[in-house]
Length: 111
Length: 116
Image (cartoon, rainbow over all chains, first blue to last red; front, side, top):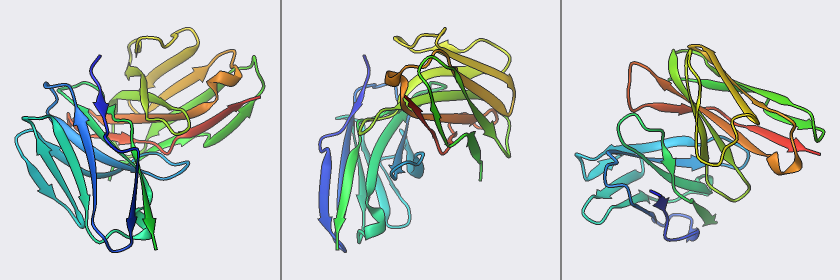
């Protein structure tokens, strides 16, 4: 069936470096994408979203890039901090469908 | 911002018993609520979609007689795990959609169910 997947299960970076987390999606009908951060034992926390009519969106220290041609999504975190350590999920949806989540990437920030 | 709460946050029950999890939208009306399940080190998997006043729609492989969903009001949905078994132990997360904003889907903090 349709799925959203990630290339890297674990990403380890040094504090202060930039982090890039990637995601591939397969449903070409998806028109809305979100990145979530999930800390242990907690629900997903919204980070940033992007609609399919855009290819880039910036927030505070985070940037999401969308490449619809190759169905690829990425999350860039600038100046990664220890508090950024968590599991990151991309999610996609189209129309009124529920969000479908990717498999997740664990980000480990080394002090 | 929109807040979704879940109760309880943690529950331990014996095998064979039933347990009910509540999901509430605190400051908005949710015509649609979603229930996800997350096993350790895995992603969130959609179990069912619940529309206020109508029967829930279950994803393939999810037993509707085992996971009873009731969405009786615009602010409350409940998930009842009937005759729970150890393999039902998981993190259950609900999500609610504001009926006035098509895209926005807000998540609760999750409920950790442990079946002994």
